[in-house]
Image 1 (cartoon, one colour):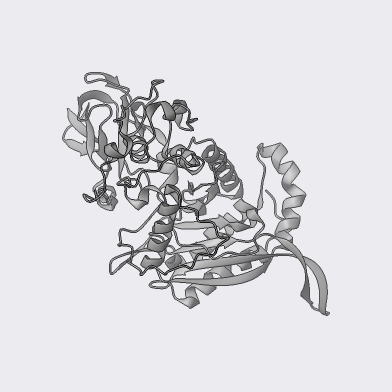
Image 2 (cartoon, one colour):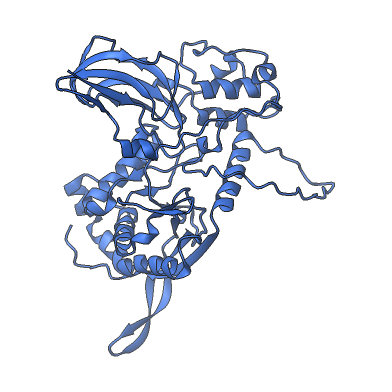
Length: 443
């Protein structure tokens, strides 16, 4: 008989731990490969972990409600065969960097801030994760008050985002001075562990008609994360303007037959994602990360797409191996991930592993943007809105002016490892692929 170690998988670049909600199997139970063995909750998603092998559950190493670090062994499964194996390869374990939250011993105790120690279950019986409970205790939110919050998590659970949205609209309710101890990485993906630089506060003169608005908790965390990313990577942004007339005309021509045949709407996003994947294959040193003095050249092209949620927050689901998919495959992946992101139905591995990010600022009517890099990636591209403009058209018979569909692309990149020639060449390469789009392309 062999023993397989089931390891808490990597739940995303910014997620260091997960709470065990429920064991779906008991010790001694038979289990099949890909059958769920445990239900867990993180700050981003609720998920189930499947068994990697057929066998018998020999040992459960943690209890329900325990908080488990990524990379820890959580169960032993006995299988046919010999020797001991692990559900995660040694190389995968080596990639896991667990960030332990640090407690500032000089701050007020969260319990003292709220006056109430919250149970793991709300008054209505809904599960409250340790992070949700700590936020509630620090901000003085009672169990009865939590019952009034509509949970967007699985089975109506209240998530961290639900708490942040509630706090932002709480009005004049008292806010405790104590901060909840959590890594900034819990807010945004791929945040660096580098300390935020201490800057001297600038004295601001307050006029008689000025209004002072205190930052809510979410805004404070976003502020710190933005400073951290800027401090980690020296940002440079390059811009190009692309004539995407052929792309627009082709998409308008095939969108109805495409939907009839594939049952999917095709937007400009998957077409641009395809061009980005091609450009990364041509210039692979844009698809890197920095680890100290080492450059990690990624072996896969996993493109994250920033997706706006109904709450106004952003999440970045990832299209894995985008270069291996055709346009139909990318379209289905984009639509599926975007729809499930808005419905809070993403799995943990679908928001992790990104190597490059694309954000569509054009969806807000913006012509261009200078996005901040999604650590530890080295570059992020922003797509501007498509506008009709007069443009010079070069022909064999001379130049003429016509109405063209134009779009700005901007690439922010880490100047430690991406020089201006590479950054500028990459965004130009994406534009070249879009400008040379074949109007007669079959789908």
